[in-house]
Image (cartoon, rainbow, N blue to C red; front, top):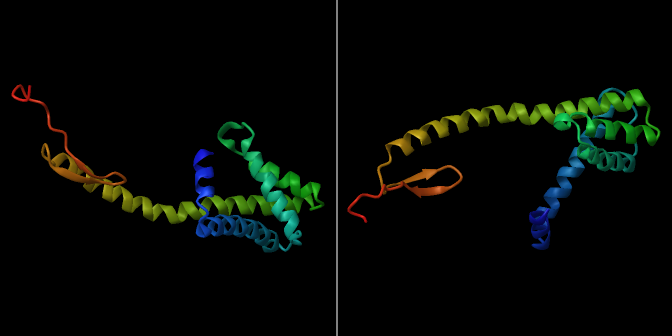
Length: 152
């Protein structure tokens, strides 16, 4: 929370646009999921409110957090007059896409990262005392030099 407040105090337009864009495209994707199954798309205000209230469902202490957001989204949509079956189908499709697209795009990145970490591990082992090695996420790091009896 503290880091979020620090970021907000920097008044960076790109940060505000990125945050708003992420949320609005996420809400738009929920609306597209209604249309994809031939259902009427709820009003933008209903979608936005359901999205915000649904995200609060993630705070419900469930094992693995599974179902809190979904139940919050579906419940809010039903309260605002959306047919329960239409809401359930759209939310399940939305959550499925929300989880599968990043996973599918992340698999190639994971393969590249594993390859880089494997070569990095080789470089670390080959690094002699006092030499520097580049470590992912840390930058150049000097290898530890063990103390000898001459060092005192």
